[in-house]
Amino acid sequence: FAGTVFYVKSVIRERGSRRFWALSLGYHAACLVAAALVASFLNPRWWWLAAVAALLLGRAVWVWLEIERGRGITPKAIGIGEAVATAVVTLLSLWVV
Image (cartoon, rainbow, N blue to C red):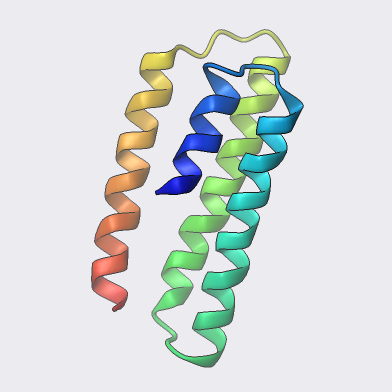
């Protein structure tokens, strides 16, 4: 859940900060790589987490680009999306272990 901080800060409090966006992308990419490695060598169920990590990485890119284009994405929409993403990752994590 630590990566949530980078993502939320990059699109709300530090909106427009390339530093926080880079931290967010780095965190999401690291999660994707870690999940893919675990799926490849230890537990194939982790491919589900790798797929979700890829979607969340894509979301981090897309939302930030939309903000850069001047599209108004509200903090409420960010919060709802993050709550759903957190629930999905939590449930999948419980299932794959």
